[in-house]
Length: 144
Image (cartoon, rainbow, N blue to C red; front, side, top):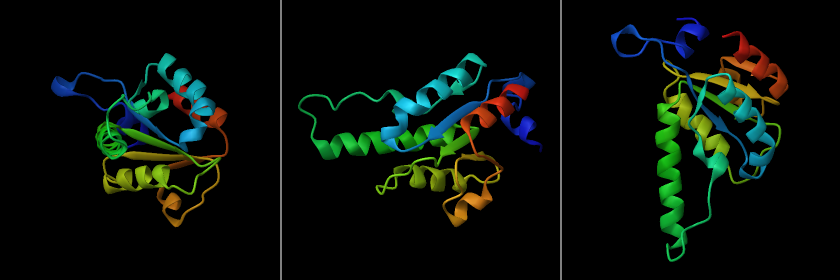
């Protein structure tokens, strides 16, 4: 199956559906990455990574419970995505984005994986496409 076929595969009854995209990046990079997510949304893609607009922990909710809920939500969103794009332009030592990429690798045969920025891990070499910049990545998604 080609990348375009994987991204734009037919849903139930053969109807076309929009590709779902999860963007994995360092949490502190969310302000830099949001404009690209918005560009993709205006192209008709569904951005399923809600962490880009994460809110503060609800008052009274313990920190550990909040972190667990965020992790479970992110895993579900990654699993629902057709395409995971990992931003490696700036990485943190916490490893959240790397973990998200690893979760997506679990679905390697059914999920498309792209990297924007340097290939920083041996696992990044398994990606379907690599781009030096977000401009190149968005340009490619415009074609599909």
